[in-house]
Length: 281
Image 1: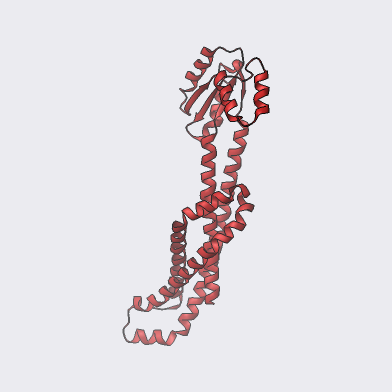
Image 2: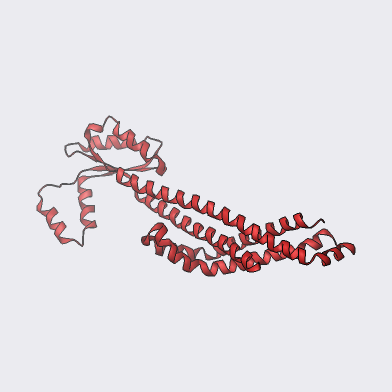
């Protein structure tokens, strides 16, 4: 029964730890993607620079807009060449074109990533829409939506599994301690007859629950890293394995303290419930 109690507590702690590490890494990944994205509004080749700057000035007045950067055709070409410095074939093809093929643009960053939809619709309905060649927002929108969906799924599944196994852990630990109380029934009765206080009788069983929690936390932290290496590729993809492993090492102490706290808490709750139900003190 003791092995069963510790095993279930360990399983509950492993689940919450895996979900915690993956959630932290997924949130960091989402923040990284959000920091890199923007709305790029490309203007037709015949649009004057002053008209583009007027558009930029107007868009900066929107409360949803954090910043709007003007990228001229020449700067766009310089950036393109710098990004493809290691690809001579592409550079030769660009140089073979007599006229700069790239378009001027305004890169818009939102104050909040959730506001990109509002900004995109405002741009599409603005008075400058006839001067706009294209808006490349939809491809980034798909990435953000996918990240958000993944994070929500991880959190919901993790919360459900943690609650489920926490209840099972409390139930099994409850029964283990109840058996202990039953086996020490005579000793408890003697302690009560000689005037032992309720807390004096309760504490040994509470400490038993605490010990179960500590053992579960230690076993869980030992098993967590190899389990993370196996589970991570199937949950968030192999591209994020190194990121999550790095986060696990970085937050190792915090994760262990969280496991220890939850394990001890579940053990104490189980003990208190068992004592209240089966000890008339």
